[in-house]
Length: 319
Image 1 (spheres, rainbow, N blue to C red):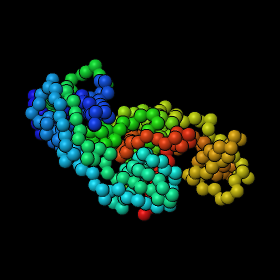
Image 2 (cartoon, rainbow, N blue to C red):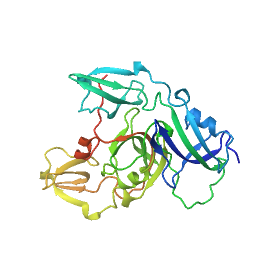
Image 3 (cartoon, helix red, strand yellow):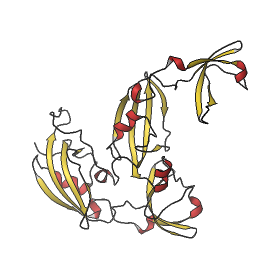
Image 4 (cartoon, rainbow, N blue to C red):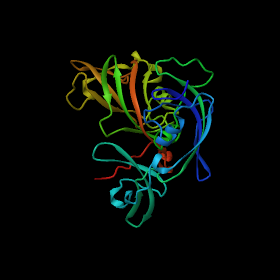
C-alpha cells in the first residue's frame, strides 16, 4: 500500500541541521501521522507521497517548506519589568497572547533593564535534512497488527518544534476532568496547566500517561484510585468539637487545618449536630475513577531554579 491522502503512516527518522543531529525517533517508537493532515511539515509530507513500507529516503527541506524564513521583526527588545521571574539567555519561555494561545520565545540577550527576545520558531530559516524509513502504511479504519514494540509516540520537532515529555521537562497542557459522567474541573481558555514532569506535581497515573508525548498530542486517560487520590479511608472521618471552629460552619464546605508538622490539611464538613462536627479528611476525589481529556501545548527544559524548587515557574509577561 502506498502513502496517499488519509493513510496512517509509521516511520523512523533522523533530522540533521548544519551537520548536527537534533532530533530522531527513539528505538521502537516510530512517528505515526495521517498523510495530508498537516501534522508534518509540508516538504517532508510531499516527499513521502507515493512511498511504500520498506522505502528509505533522504529529504532536504528548504525553509519555505519547513518552518519558514526567519523574520527580523519577530526579534524584540522588551523592558526587564515585563517579566515576573528571572530569565536566562538561551532559555525558551512562554507568553499568553490576546487570543488566549501560548507563544514560545527565546531570550537572546540581557543588557541592564532590557531583554532581547526572539519569537521565531527555533528552526525558522534552517535547511532540514531528513533520513527516513517507512515502516507501515494502513487505512485509518484498519486495526494495526500487533507488534513487538511500544505504542508509537510522535516526536516533537516534526510536529511543531518541541520535544517529548520526560523527567525535568516543563509541560503546558489543556485538560478536562470527568468523574461519573460529570465535568468537575478543566483548564480555562488560554490558561493551561503548567507542571514539572517527574516531580510529583500531578497524580501518578496521569503523569505516566503523558511520558513520551509531544506538543499537539491529545489523549484520553482513565486513572484508577490507586494512581490518583487513593482509596477512601473510613478512619479519616472524625468528629470534632464545635469549639474547634472560629467561624460559622457550612455542611459540604471545605476548610483547612494545620498539622503538627506545619502542613495544611483540607477537610470537608459532613454534618453539624449540636456541639459536634463530623468532618472528612479524605481528599474529595479519593476512591474515584478519574477520566482526563488532555492536549499537550508545550514542552521545554526546566531551568535550574525550577529543578531546585521542584515545580514549574510561569514567566508570564504583562501585556
